[in-house]
Length: 228
Image (cartoon, rainbow, N blue to C red; front, side, top):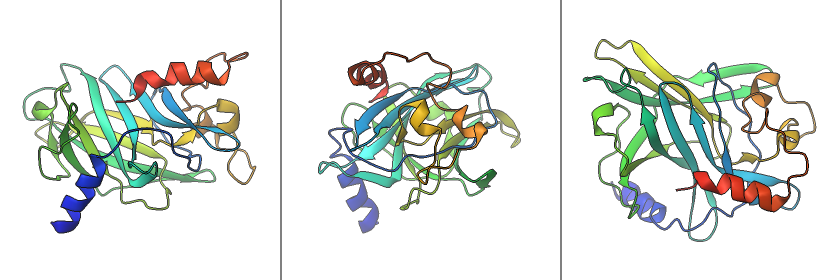
């Protein structure tokens, strides 16, 4: 309990999204659109915030950054913007999972991640950590801290899965875990210079957007909309 309290005191100190990190890849089996806030390292702008959506749900996903400007790879935060009528049926629950891709091989960690509600206005946690969350508890004034338990940043995608009271999947949505390369041309290559798998590059937020002529300011202004 002491470690959890200490961790969330640190989380409430988030003041900016200006840290550097390694670019990430992702895996998805859904048609997902995303957009993200940017930070910079010496070579590439990195995404710290993203938005993903489909016909059943929409959510923003943000990196967690401490007051010292360090990205905590063990945590991200999520805010739901929209849930369909099917998604919010009484008795539905949501669980979060993480994906990773190595070469062309993708794998899902089947252990549901811990999630904790927090107040969007104050950043203060308002509930205990659980790996199953009632959809009825989700509203526009609350966000969720998601405990990735991934200090090396090996996982690259977060999946939200909504189940009905019988345990059947009602809806699901995948989103890249920030931070990742902001430009799709940068994201097309792994850190060692090899080509990233097509399933990953297709998931990049700007994969199908014409960005020729965009300045860094254009990227920053566009992606900043999804930070919270």
